[in-house]
Length: 66
Image 1 (tube, rainbow, N blue to C red):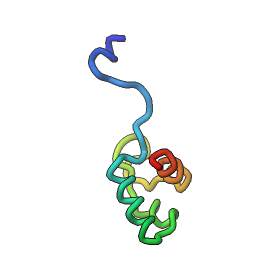
Image 2: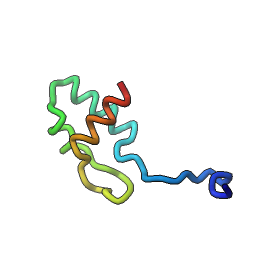
Image 3: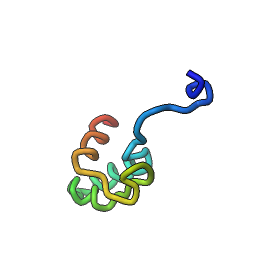
Image 4: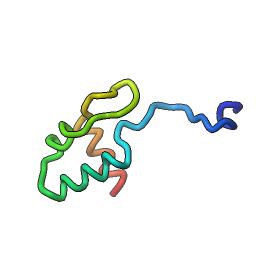
């Protein structure tokens, strides 16, 4: 409860942020395959920082945003 009062939220950080998602939609509109888009993106924070997101993660993020 004290952590929430300070503005801290628990849980794992998002793998794909809003900027990455906008870039992914722009590439997808240009006809790039989702697997190619995933290779061009890089996760910024968390355990998987500096790695590409999985194709499944990208599909989930794009479906949630649509």
